[in-house]
Image 1 (cartoon, rainbow, N blue to C red):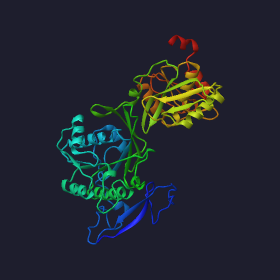
Image 2: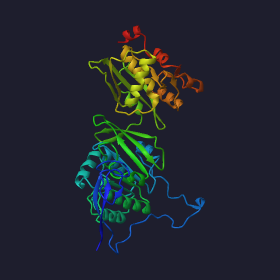
Image 3: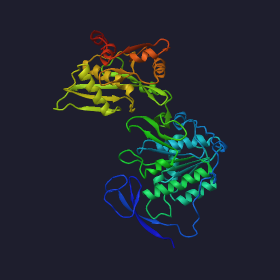
Image 4: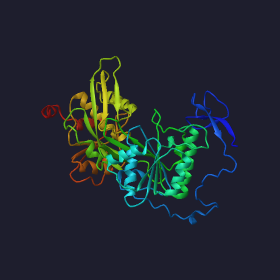
Length: 465
C-alpha cells in the first residue's frame, strides 16, 4: 500500500514545509502555503523515464553534436523568436493573457509542421476535440496529420505519445494535466511541477519538441512554481491589448537563441498573420504635421521598428496634474517631463500629460526618449514635428543627448520608409561613416537644440494646419 505524507507547499515559489506558517520562509510571501497530501510511489511501481544522456563522464570534445539540426518553421516571426527553428528535444513554455491567441498560434504551428507528412499531437486539457475542430475549420486547417487528444490524465497522455511517435507535441495547458501518483488536484504546485518533469524527460529521451501552454497570474507572471521556467529550454510570452489587433511574441529565456528578438502578428479572421514590416503597419494611420506626434526608431532585438509616439497636454483641473503613460515606462515619462521643465523651461507644472505608443507596442529602451520629449513639447507649444523627421536619442538629466547602439540599422529602416531626415545625438554623427543615400542626419548636443530643429516654426505650423 502506498504511503502518504502531508506537506505545505508555497503557491509562489514551490518550496515545501513540514508545517504551516503564515509567511513562507523562502520567498517571504504571506498566506501562500497550501496543504498537500503527497502519495509516495508504491513498491513495484515502474521508475520514471530518464533522459537518454550518457551515464559516464565524457571529454567535452568527444561529445557528439548531432541531433540538433533545427526543424524549419514556415512561420517566419515565430522562427525568429525561437532562434531560427525548433531544436529537437527542446521544451518551449508559451504563456500570455486569456484569449490572446496562444492556442490559435500553436494550432497554426501544428498545421504547417504536419504538411510535410510528419504527425503532430495536440493535447487539449481545456477544450474538447469538437472545439479544436471548430477552430481548425475557422483557420482553414484540414491536414489529417494533426492528431487531437482531449485528455488530462498524464499517464494516458504519455502512453499515446509513445504509441503515435509524433514529430511535435503540444500540451494545452500544463495546468490541466494531473497524475494519479499525486493526490492534490490539477493545477496545484506539486501537480504542475511533477507532470512537467515527466513530460520533459519523455521529450528529452525521444528527442521530440514539446510545447507547453502556461496560465498567467493576475500580475502577469506564469502560474505555478517558478521552477517550471527553470526546467524548460525556452519561455515565450504572447502580449498585446485585447482591443488592438497586433500581438507581440517575446522570448524571456532561450537556451538555443537570443532573448532580444520579437515576433509581430496581427489577429485576423483566419488566425494570427505575420507582420513582416511592423514599422509600416504601425505608421499606416499616422496623421502628418499633427501637433503632439513624433516618430521614434526603436530596436527589438536585431530588428529596427519605427513607432509613432503621441502626447497630449491640457490644463489640469486638479491640484496635482496627472501623468499617464501607455506603452512607455511611467518613471521614464516623469524623468523626461522634469528635464523639459528644468532644462528647456517648458511650462508643464499645470498641465496633464498623456503619452501613448500607437499600436499597443511597449517601448522600453531609452532611444525613444527624444521622440517622447518632442511629442510632449509639440503638444504643449502646438507646433508639430516635421513629417519627414524621425528621432533617435537618450535624454540625460542635464538635458544632454546621449548616443544609442545600432544606429546604422535604425537609419536604414527610416530611409526605407521614406523619411528624409533623422535627428540623432551629435556624438553619434562622428562615428557614422556612410549614412543611407538620400537621408540627412542631423545632430544636436542638448534637448533644447533638438527641439529647435524638430519643431516646425509657428508660421509653418499654422500654414500646415
